[in-house]
Amino acid sequence: MLGRLKRRAEFVQAAKVGRRAARDSLVLQALARPDGDIGQGETRLGFTATKKIGNAVARNRAKRRLRAAARLHLGAAPPAGWNIVLIARDGTGRCPFPNLIADIEAALRKAGVPRPEGEA
Image (cartoon, rainbow, N blue to C red; front, side, top):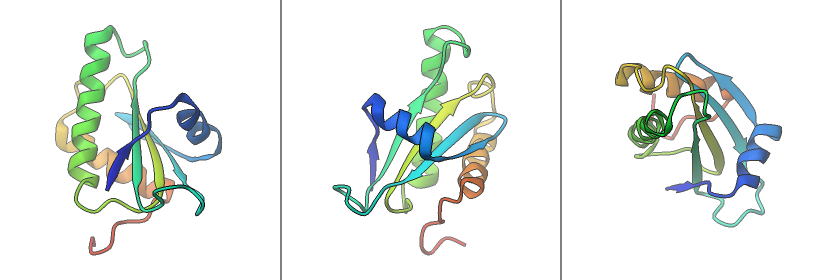
């Protein structure tokens, strides 16, 4: 099950304590949630884009593409108990969509997020 990160404190905690992996089209920050958290089995995603990306139209486009790629890659069988932040980079809006999905997969692997059960 996929949830959303909504509070700034959750984003900041993932940035300070979590593992980080960078690719051409995105930066991923992943933080394993402690066992005491409510909804332990749920993986929660957050998306952000800074003003370096461009105007509001460019930032929203980049975040929409990240959400769609994450939904395709993680939607069926997400790893349990993680907070994952995807940060758009300058090329996120122009990157071919299959490359964006591949970048998410590679960043998850580099950050040490376990692969879902049943996925080779």
